[in-house]
Image (cartoon, rainbow, N blue to C red; front, side, top):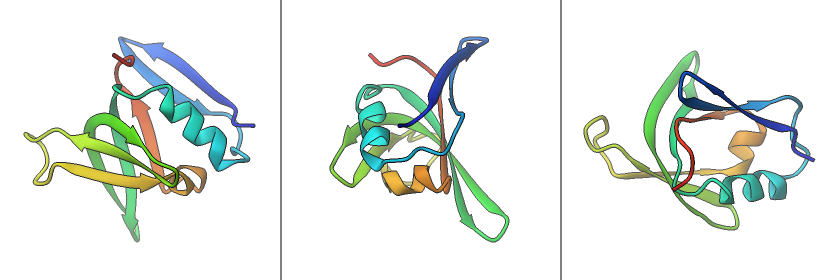
Length: 100
């Protein structure tokens, strides 16, 4: 079972993973409950490189989740990542606000 902890600090809701999640289904279920939340993504893009993106978690599908990006900060509108990216910590998510 995924051992996720949501905490708030200075108005920012953070997701803390206390242990390695055991199933992709639990990651998907946790994200489904947060659709509409503003998030900050940090994605590993290669050797010692990271990409930070801010957006809104908009959709979940059987294998991926979709984030609509802030048009002022990014050159494209949407990105998608697999749940296994979270499991392997290739992508880290920080929730900036509660779901609408």
